[in-house]
Length: 249
Image (cartoon, rainbow, N blue to C red; front, side, top):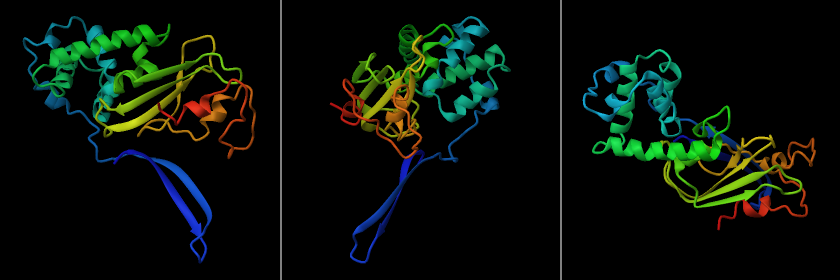
């Protein structure tokens, strides 16, 4: 299945003692997953008397569809990337309705309203002058997995960029790309101190950004190293990232 993996190679002697070990991280994507939305299938969908039909204006429908990206499948993202600018308003409404009807057959409008309220909350919390909240890393994670069970903010550690750690005791992927996971964490950091642009630095969740040198990058403004094998930043007064990440409480 798609996800994050580690290839571990052990070298042992004749007495089975470990002599050396090499670990290589890699990500795998299942290319058998459907990657195209069938336009003909969409055009056959009736939206008469549905909430999608009541949505007014092509620009509004397009914005609603863009906000779905955090929970969209790869095929649905392909439609957003390749067809959104070309599609007419009716086709966009058919896509929009099918998106929610396929996720909540009995109450698609209720499902959309719940999600839309979350989008508005995310835009208010994480939006910036040039980005909607759902376009930011924190907004995307919030919409894809829900609010974290624990959110810790570290805005002023002496040797680190401002950062946040989000903890999920149970992680359910609303895009359905990954199975349910437990005790997963995300660390976001802000290298642009003048904005609210926290980027995802590292996570131990499947299919997410995985960087074994995240500590070095978090402390890069004060810790300089040309050793690309170095993964741990030196201990310093007031620092807690090493203790906090990897120990969900």
